[in-house]
Length: 257
Image (cartoon, rainbow, N blue to C red):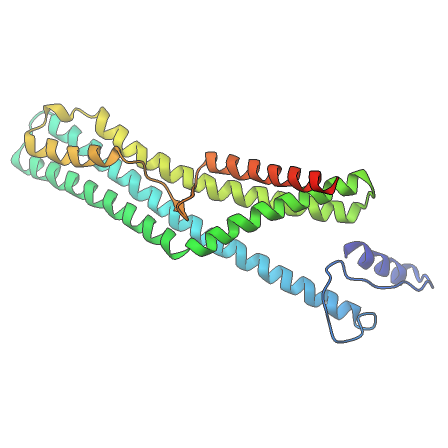
């Protein structure tokens, strides 16, 4: 698309009296003369593409910010546990400070529970969308890898090669970023239990140990952003999706032969 546009632009600037046929890189059906209204259609397609990219980037950024907020809540819970035990083990512990210790631990437990509840609710509301994105991303990646292989092997079309390469890069990027955020959720959740294990909880009285025990028991269960009960957003899941794309590409290539 860009090549044909630059050719037309060069014809206008250089006053080249050569007739060229117009064609759109994206195949679509317009019930008007595409040769006559080429620039209008070109502007329409690019406007739709630009608006779509802005909407996708904006939505993705909002979702990432939301999950980063959950990571922040996990960090706050870890900090409250560490501060509470540090306050209790410090010298000159007064009754008021002991009350603050209990409040910090209770709030840490509540923050941790609320973070898990919010994350599960967030994923449950977008189950179908996320599953669709996973399937679409894997298939798109496989087909574009296959198309690049065809271009390199048989017909080296630079413009189509660049388009396929950009699509593959976008698929890699969105898969990596989404799974990286999921990995951060797992790491921040695990850090709470690492903090609970490392603090000197054994020198605290029994009521405080019971609060710590609630957190430790919850740590025995792994937590992550599960999509469809099949995928848990993590770097391991990212590797799995890439391997699946390569496997589908291999199947497509073998059936072609």
